[in-house]
Length: 487
Image (tube, rainbow, N blue to C red):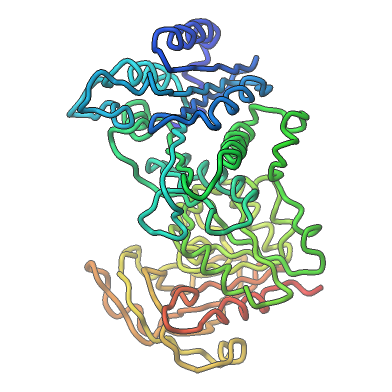
């Protein structure tokens, strides 16, 4: 159930519920020693956002400062609830169940364990978003098994999208890339976030700070930025209010032209459906190109007009349909308009699917469609051979081995308003696992290019940006040169 649906269902009883729930929050604070609940409510109807800190340990070094400031934030609509769990509240009454994992599990435990979990569960039942702030050692960027600097979300499109927005805002304040947040999916079933999603269909996430790499002031500041971004996403606050200026928040649409005068700007899509590895590897291929700057952008920024600043965009691997859902109809229309007005588009694997005209959710940028809907062909390293046009554009060896991972098998479509594409490289090998059709990949296009209005499009079915042991980044950099609008 998405947020809009929940709000519509609640609308008829909004005023009465507001009175009853405010009484509930006050009684919760009084009834559970060590649990402090603060409510900041706007006059207009909007979502309820519930953040809790301290379930996994005392946060006396910065939680009180967060609570003090959050109480003063001018929420205009909806409700923001912040709960601080201190030492006394972490005594669940059951030594076998820690408060971090004291929440219901369908089919195993129907009720939360202990007064603290019961109180938080009552509030969670009425929330649209839940954020459980915790700490873990190290950083995900430097230790693959670490949980520090991660946002763990349940498998929900809206929650993943929100996690990306929050990560983007917090990363904007951190110069060290090893401390950047990484959104992940999952979470333990008995923790607050996943349990709330399972029982109430709440959009929920667990935000892990790095205990060892951030000091208390940094954690406090970054928590404020994450909450600020979530409240702003739902237009619950007036971002022009002076109380938010000390945060130095990332603007909704950064002025990258002002930040990087004279540079070519390549935006890399980081919304739901875009794989973190694909984003990172795509950006890294441009590191040595002096006149090009790559920046991440979200689907919300697309809808807010950020594409006007870019010379080209890259939609990386991941899920094409996921990226389409994240953009929404308005966002997809803006990407198509951007290309038609002269912008460049590079689609890699999922981004290639997204660009096609044969998909109901596609962008209609290139007159191509997939040969078969059975796309789970598997992964392998396959040879591709450049065409004459591809050899002229890319240079290098005529035949190279490239990582393939279920990218589209391309054939011409029949879109009446798009020209035929030009093949830049052909597959000379095939992988056909999971009962997918055999024989359709060999000699099919691996890379294709075309025009769309005044813009240029390149779609790449395999993954040159992540082919281990080969330097194939030129497939992206040379593609970018090809699609850059003339200045």
